[in-house]
Length: 120
Image (cartoon, rainbow, N blue to C red; front, top):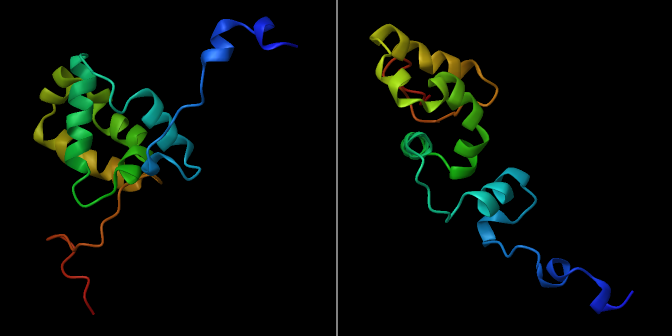
């Protein structure tokens, strides 16, 4: 088949060029790079989700947070600001156990005040 017979979009479409951090075989990182990273976002719910995830990233890699995104969505009512605003103190305290019990829960080696020091 000659090049002229191919559809125009097939001739003009190049494989996506990715940043080094999106390479390496992690499909979720590649998808995030291709579909979300660097794309202007105007949806208030999505902006709230990204702000919350950025906050949880402190001390963790973005890859770790991205892989735990669904657990965060479950814990924080799909990042619906109105729902999160209605959380009472008891519900707020219950979010962490949801994340901690998840196989996708973030882990930190830093000691928490409740657990005390991890140093031996």
